[in-house]
Amino acid sequence: MKRNRNVGIVGVGQTVHSSHREDVNQPELIYEAVREALEHAHLKIADVDCIIHGNMELFEMVHQPDLWHSLGTGAAGKEVLRVTTGGTTGTTLMCAADHLVASGLHDVVMAVGVEKLQEGHTTGGITNMADPLWARQLQTGALTGLSADALIYEFGAERARRASMIYRVIMDRHAALNPKAHRRFGFTMEQIDALAASSPRLVGELRMVHMCSQSDGACAVIVASEERARRIRPNPAWIEDHATVHREEMFGVFGGLPIRSTMRHAAEEIFARRGIREPRREIDVFEMYDPSSWWGIEWLKEFLLLEGDAHLRMIEDEAIAITGDFPVNPSGGVIASNPIGATALVRVGEAALQVMGEAGAHQVPKAVERALASGFGGTLWTVLFLLSRKLPVW
Image (cartoon, rainbow, N blue to C red; front, side):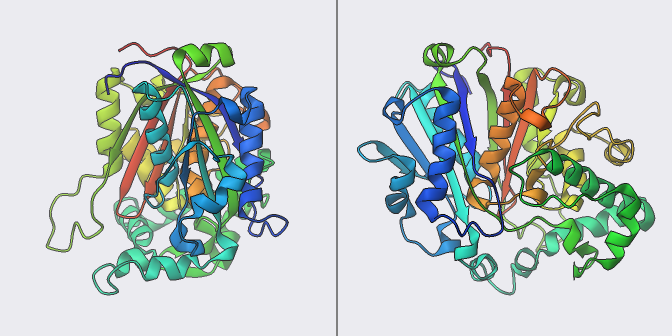
């Protein structure tokens, strides 16, 4: 990750996320996020050298959507790259934007992610993308259910189920602070048992209440070279490092081989490069791509390199709450808002706002020097970003 020059995030914009944004078409939805990002950075579209566009075109069934979407992105006459890597699309957009600026090819690049899931058929797209026999665990969401089973086997049903619901309630509390979040129910800890009992069962221990939504929404993040970033704003969120790790979903089909998660691998790679020995103490906030509360528990352990039941204790003690010592998803996370092509980009954008101290009502109350953001998708693909208030030294 040695680079020619540092890159900073200077502008973040996103729409209000909803199950049905019927008031706008896709370019109009994108325009809302792009306009807000430009205003946040005090830039005009003419100041942007290149647009990186991403969504899951399989879900809306629009071929080459970046062409139509140029009405909203402002890409006419500019270099445009279209990137799609499944659920990780948003973070992959940021990887591409970072490399384009760090290399010296461009000075200012805008990443734009979008999804208007009401206009397509997400489940149909997912279930037709893979072999119906070999990949049926992926298609049915059973991977998340298997994680629930593993936690129950290790820690007992009562403790594991309660931790999953505590995590869910904390995420809902955070979403209630975020005016752009899609699902804000007002859950309380006193409702845990009733919510778990009444929510429809999907697969195994996985219930509807545990899962993320389908959302309409868009996000735009602007990055700039160090020289330009310092002129644009006094407090850029500097990109300190990022890592991409992936593997196939059929990793265990040939027997009980040891499994190394892409989350732990990505975290170990970044922490080793940046000299981070105690991530829970050296990182101030984490915007995690958490498709369900069960995976949120498991991945907290993997990303923070925890052992034993430390991840469960963090949840039980509410250390992951916005006022806790290690806030997770003060925005409400993916469980609250999930416009798939933009979801992972929202994680990076929200982490950047925390570093800038500009997240509004869901700004964590302590100073944020470093923030993590992750993306997840398809074949157990993980992208992990580390952002910093201080200029990185290479």
